[in-house]
Image 1 (cartoon, rainbow, N blue to C red):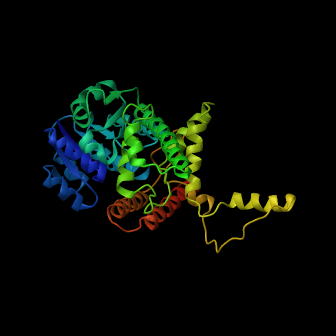
Image 2: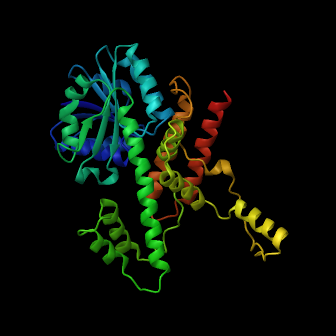
Image 3: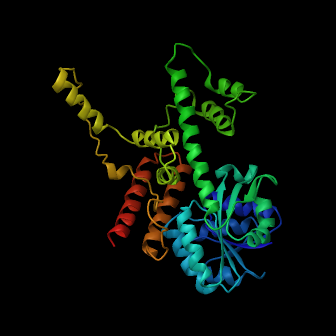
Length: 377
């Protein structure tokens, strides 16, 4: 098949390469032209504007896959594509969008007789080798039309499927990520208990043993084995600062909206907030109160320089399911560019040997300003 592909970050570039290896014709575009040139070296048809991307698509109906950060970047790409596409063409959102955004975007595109499919995509940087797990939402016949693309991207025939109308793909991916939060937290707590014991346990070897017949075996545990082999059991070069991209928050809010008890996922999200604090103000208050009512000893602050405030702990998530479906007519091209530039900076920092913590803080500040301005409007 033929596909236009927008967004050539680490995951997007790997998806394009896997599609090319599967024999598909891919017209690739990225805001930064060097990424487009890299895709061209792998066999993609390069496009240096959305107009050039659409004009290079020959098959009808034309299909364009968007793989950019959720929120304003996705909104802006869709806005810019609408006047370039024709009735019957297809837009695919394979990013981590809020499922309510996907429902709203589908309605807007329906007014132009353009089809929309939301694809919850899992696989990360390992997808090129192992394939991508995908959950689709939208029109069934559009899913069937695009099946050859999905079959190439997936690890096998059971690695992708259609789950319902618009929003279903991103909804199921949201819950998938919420479950992931709980699993990661459980592994982290388990290894911390092991580390606190009197036994000198080789964590990499233990992970390998658990993965051979153990009830807790998983791909995440395989990655744990790899991490312990690379960084040692002390993980001395890794700071325990854990970000969240939004899906865990949305999962918790959906649980609240439907009165579904979800303590494990909720507490795993809260644990990520704790991980970002240099000092806990709530703990300081508790210590002060215990000293006041019971004379309990307190520890003096040793030059605590933490300036972490509640707002700075918020993720870059562009919306929450606590409100009605987010319309896609909010935001701006400036906001879209700011988020995409920050995401690109984060990828570059991750690929370098330097400290990426400053980049993470910069991304948070940029995103918070953008989303706060949206709320203010």
